Image 1 (cartoon, protein in one colour):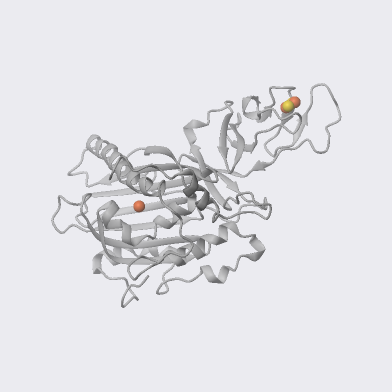
Image 2: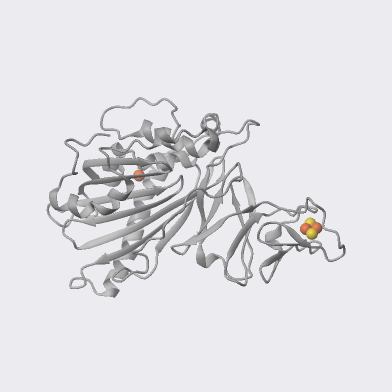
Length: 382
Ligand code: FES
Ligand SMILES: [Fe+2]
């Protein structure tokens, strides 16, 4: 693609910002759900880190018990950044006047005063650590997490490469573009070289997923008539697993993609991949090297998406045609994460395709590969 095409002008960014989800006071609304904030090894015991997400500064630290905690960083006292503080056991002590907070955000100690003021509390966020990633539960209404994410069984499992080959980048766009891209069928061939011939999207509450297969003109180009089967499952608005299986059985890969909004037009995006292959054809060293190459190729492919996103206009009412993929449906599903819980109409997000469930996407892949059919579906529609 042309290198010299400028990124969006300020005017285009302004136009995009007119259509993002907002709160009643006009400030940006960030999605409800689990959001990755970093790889586990970025959070060492007793070394607090500052992260800017959801339009705020967060102080994240791993206590001496090994648990990661996350809170709004600005001290309720006089506003120092708590991530510049010191971890004391499982508590976090502010550097400015040494007020000390527990993982719930409650001030539990003031060195020069016995009486803790009632408002000496900062907002804490639920934290979950799975697959060597740290996730924070963001909810504008500050409710408890309403979804769980099962860790990947394959991660660090037998036959798979040992840990993520990974990258992280910062992108100037809104998370809605990343989510929408996952069902944008029409871009798969021009951008990613994936010629999809069968496609089954499925929705279940706060999860969505899809099963598709076709000929990948880059990844499987060396094996004649080899097909690539892709199954992806999104857990809420920003954490997604994708399995890729080749017909030839030579090489499987499992990809984690996750993203978190920094501010209204910036997000961090993480990518990790593990691979598995026929041990008769790949030694463990060859497999690790293949995973490195795969990660690099994925980065290059992903940057082609990024190139588009950083220059595009969000069209609230796009002109769509048959073959585009279920973009309108995906947008409807995605609104739930920006809607107060009491107003979310769950029924409209349980529109399974051909009675397939998310669980079916996991369980029925071998059957699909064996028969080249989606059981129960005469034709597969978006
Ligand atoms: S600003 Fe944190 S203790 Fe005073
Ligand atoms: Fe894409």
